Image (cartoon, rainbow, N blue to C red; front, side, top):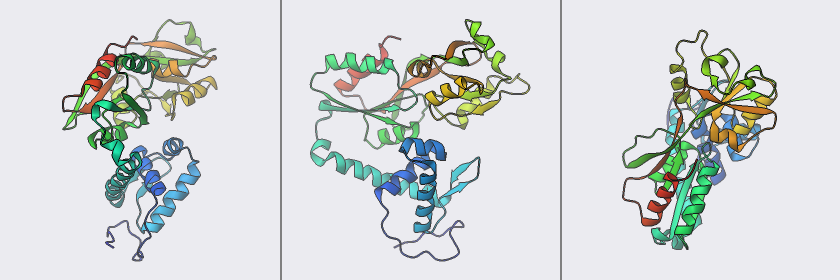
Length: 313
């Protein structure tokens, strides 16, 4: 068995390792995509301490450090990046096997596989799918929830026919189009002084602790947000990055600060003690996009895309 050598390896030469389990691959891939133990644990529906223990066990088993981690930051090592490529291939093969050879060979016009980014799901998508079903009787639709990066990879790998996300994507072989925009809203505790306003300026909340739940999480989005408010001194105080819209609403309801999320995210998790007010200027609306391969779509997919385009607000 080939053992990778790199600076992150322990001093002892690792013994031949037993084959990794699919569960270990899944835990590793999810953490590699999120680079955040709390978010990865929530996505896997396990405790954060359990995930940390599993990753330590995996690193011990392979004899290599896979992640650099501090109290504020997690990133892949060189060995981790190389293992990620292999782990994704293993999970893709497992997915193919699970679906079964017969199902995989079904004609593409009899089944569609749609991925929805975890952060953009809303009633508008559900209404569009309901309308599409009336035009496509007998077509099986499989819908899965994925992180933005996993969504892109599964479309590239042929595991999904299309995906809905708020990520900005410029990848060879991937066609993307804007479906609609999702305006930003401010979440306020019901006793907050700004609840009397019909709309709120970004400057009015610039000095308050802010919880940010973006439809496409990551450093790129946060830098873009800060770029839109260069005149604030001190800059926006982003105190919390909740792992879900519901967690943001609870944080606001507890009086910890104000929240910033999109209108569809807020509508989906309404809290009676939290008020939502439109954000007036200061930040461009989020764009919800459809991703697919760049080949012409089959007829059922083309009809689904049209239904999404025309779905009511």
